Image 1 (spheres, helix red, strand yellow):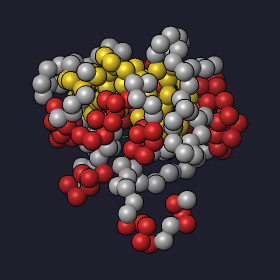
Image 2: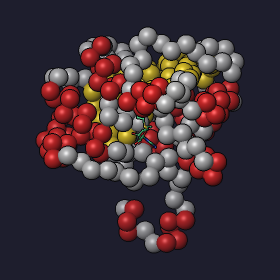
Image 3: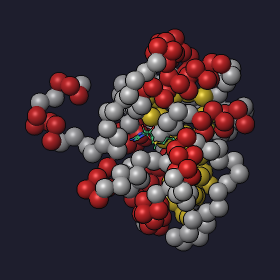
Length: 231
Ligand SMILES: C[S@@+](CC[C@H](N)C(=O)[O-])C[C@H]1O[C@@H](n2cnc3c(N)ncnc32)[C@H](O)[C@@H]1O
């Protein structure tokens, strides 16, 4: 357990791509977590091996960092035959999404509350058809770049979890991070860039607009889409 570690252990902790700024949960979100977690939640004590639900219609999409869940909800409604899994450590966002899943009677979504960097390595290889990472935290300060999630090593792990021809779709409104991800994709042996070497792809019609995308657009940011494919 993390809080029982002593100071020496703390220095050996992996770098986290998020900080525990949980924010306030509304009473409704708290109730949703209590009541709906048994229906929609996947508990992770020792990783995700054997924990993901079987594909439906041959498809399983994993969204890393679902935030308030707009994309996951929209995609799950668009494809009721598909299976959708979200992972994010932020509990208020999970609470909000759970309320919507219940309200809209969407039953093909499952949620994991946790750190993708820690948990994704334990997913069985070749078990996902699509992975989405929409507007990951950009960590704009140079001294924080090491917290960025989409490193060459993590992209390689994501590639390993995709079925052959499976897709990794990333979007960000942070140009410098987008370039860094393109370069990392170029170095990833099990993924190719669908748009061509070191190129961004056009925004796909199927990608829903998320809260952070709207925020970026309001600020006048350009949005960059990146499409990797499992070789
Ligand atoms: C900038 S927000 C974007 C949220 C949403 N995708 C959107 O576009 O509105 C980044 C999200 O990634 C989540 N996140 C950060 N590090 C993560 C990690 N290691 N594993 C899973 N989610 C992570 C954060 O909690 C946050 O919800």
